[in-house]
Amino acid sequence: MRRQAVSSSTIASIGYDREEHLLEVEFVNGSVYRYRLVRESVYRELMAASSHGRFFNTRIRDRYPTEQVD
Image (cartoon, helix red, strand yellow):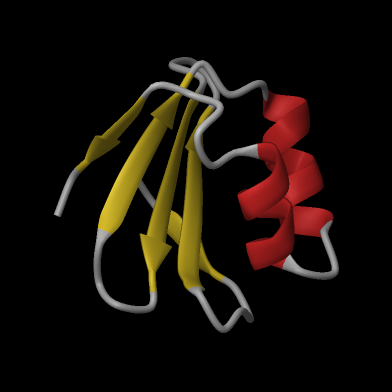
């Protein structure tokens, strides 16, 4: 999945697969996680958020099925 770099102190890049409803987040420490069943609207809101990390922590973390990739 192709990820886009973002300006954040905790998140390095974010990717999204529309067909699979799969969000992929690379953190600045190098770890990569995939979040399943994420609606595209949530992805768009994440990308538009003034703070990607704050949005992620309040709206995504611990709310979706998750797997660590790296």
